[in-house]
Length: 151
Image (cartoon, rainbow, N blue to C red):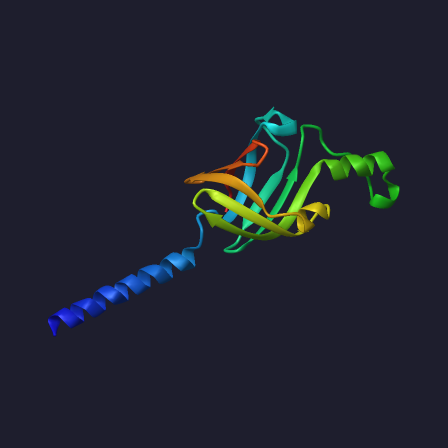
C-alpha cells in the first residue's frame, strides 16, 4: 500500500512539473529590444535604431527600423513625397505571425508583413541563443541581431 501511495505521489509531482513547464512557455517569451546589429546589408551597428520583437507562447510581432539613417519626418502620408515614402518603407522591417522553436532553431510563419512575399513564401528558420536577458538571433543570411529583454 505504501508503494502505491508513493507511486501516486511521484506521478502527481511529475504531472505538476509538466503543467508548470507548459505554463511558463518558451524562454523567448517576452519583449526584446534590438541593441546591436552585425552583418548583412547594415554592417555593424552598435547603437541601432529602435526595434522590438515581442513573443507570446505561439505568436510573435517584429518591428525594427533598419540601417543607420533616421527615416524622413513628415506631417502625414498625404504630404510626404514619393521619395520620403520609399525611404520610410525601405527603412522598416515589420511582420507578425506564429513561431515554433526546436532546439536552437526558431521557425517563423508570418501572417501579416510589410510586404506580401514573407507571408506567401516559405517559413523562415533562424538560429537563436538565449542567455538570461540576452538573445542572439542569426538570420539565414548570417546577420546577427543582439537583443536585451525589456519585459
